[in-house]
Length: 77
Image 1 (tube, rainbow, N blue to C red):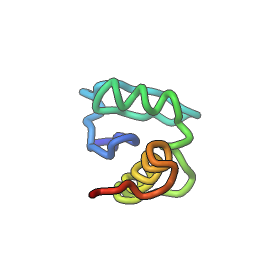
Image 2 (cartoon, one colour):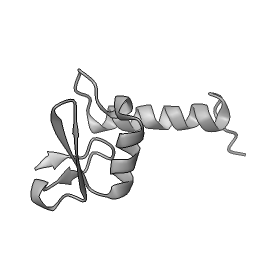
Image 3 (spheres, helix red, strand yellow):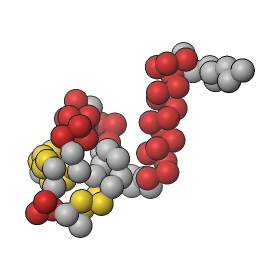
Image 4 (cartoon, rainbow, N blue to C red):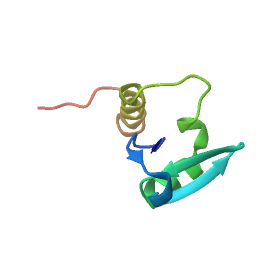
């Protein structure tokens, strides 16, 4: 089993939705949308230090907040 670097889902290598070799390492993806996201910005998903799924999720959430709200928390009410 391999882990999809984009969404964190576990993927069987022989039935992956997409496969990509990047800097000599094979990456397996659950779907073409995860493959496309990785291919556009691999530096977001590959680092020297291993991060857990929670850290990756929080980093993506913070990035989306910066892009959508300019870094300020959105108003709920």
